[in-house]
Length: 324
Ligand code: UDP
Ligand code: MG
Image (cartoon, rainbow, N blue to C red; front, top):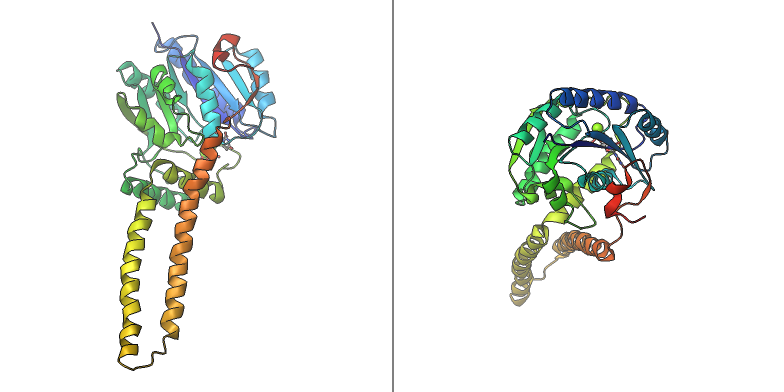
């Protein structure tokens, strides 16, 4: 039996590239069907993440003409990771394997054939890894590299230079969906799923059209979310840092006392000011970090839904998991 493939594409205001993306992905899929590598029931699933442009209209029009094209429209913008999850959840029941790819064709669609090949070899998770990032800005490259290093330093397993271009088997996706945390940092969670994995390298291209939906502010918040979702080590560091500061403080505190006992007046203003500022800084930083985790708990305990589907162009049986 040939596997049914679903390619999930999260889209947020992608009207400039969408038609192009559709035709490229359809070409790849048709070729794979011809080569008998995948079932002819394979399809593309576009998740419209609350776009404000014509993205949904484009998906609907295409879906009417081509039954290989499906769509899910989310009621509002919930961000790339949640949109991807919505797609995985909608596709899981009726696919044997799922590939996720961005709408802007920065990831090489020709690699999809290699993904399928690796899947046939028995791999249940196949990561697309960027070999070169020279099309990304200098800042994005350097910040990404330091981020991987930082995460690895904290013992978090991330696949270097892998974003969300990957294949997962149905089993792996269903297992992934059992992770119910509100803040899903997929890049960190997928390696936790386990199973036999493989990687495929490719060159990342420039965005075909439109602009990045990840400005610096979103990138920083995404990076911080990733870190605090996976480790409490920063809190331990604070404890260790606190202990060191305490010892130093005790030493510094003894000095003026000795001076006083010896009858020397200590001017002390500079050192007092310096320590107040320093310790004030340490405290504020620590409080901020602890606050991050408390904020996280606050978000998690509410168990809010991650997305809401407003409209869908899928067969009713695929929506078993949702009750609308
Ligand atoms: N995206 C999304 N919701 C958002 C932001 C982005 O679904 O709120 C999609 C976007 O349409 C694209 C993918 O996520 O398919 C990656 O976004 P983008 O290419 O802008 O990120 P970059 O490649 O610049 O990191
Ligand atoms: Mg992109």
